[in-house]
Image (cartoon, rainbow, N blue to C red):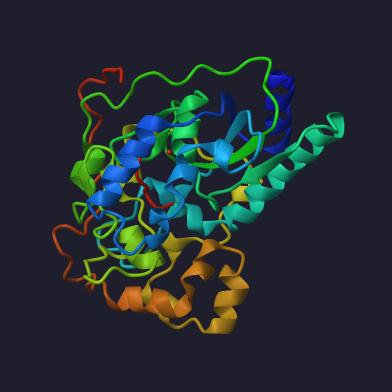
Length: 335
């Protein structure tokens, strides 16, 4: 049987800020919600979301004999996550300013798995970092890390939505599991919905990726174009306006220190960059996923700073008047 306290110590030693354990099970309600989301075509150009629906909803179909899901989260908040000044034309999602989290978190999880298997030779498992069909945000809720906000992201009480997730699926039961996170702490706040410049949050927790700026700037572009609001890679608008993010501390794990400052770069600096300089400066970051040519194209699709659209200015809405816990975390994905 797995020692849950030992696993949490391994997670902390590896550099994670949060860790929770949940039993592997079929997430029936979430599978139904996913199928309904797909049925409305909200996946747009993200055809991969249509595959492996059964696996997404049941981690036991990904790892034979899986009994326990270990869900880890690490904060990555940096200065860019607090928002950009009005008229800034070359905005980059804050997570993309650091080294690619897939590589970093895979190494962190690998160290945990190696230690567990060394102490338990009969144990097997697999690490996941946003690269397999797994409803990781719901698993995080099941493991007690937080709740799903109206922008469809995991919200944690201490770090807000500015967390990156990684999971271990292990083939043994734990001696204790964390209780699922109950309810929501969004209260009456609708900042994320009201701040989205393209109306991509069509209902609480429901994202139309055909309208999502992150999808348009990173993934295969949908057939219909949208205004990019000055974003050239990803989008943080539904995060920088969140009261939980505004009060969240900056990250402390140096592995997530930014390698460049997007606030110090304008369109001219980006357009003057050649492929050699791009690789030298950004080669370790997620920006390589879209590449310099795509970034240049995104810059060309943004309005000039002396003629901004009224919808392209960053707003920092005030805190909601009342936060009421209810009952019921870098593309936003379906529930």
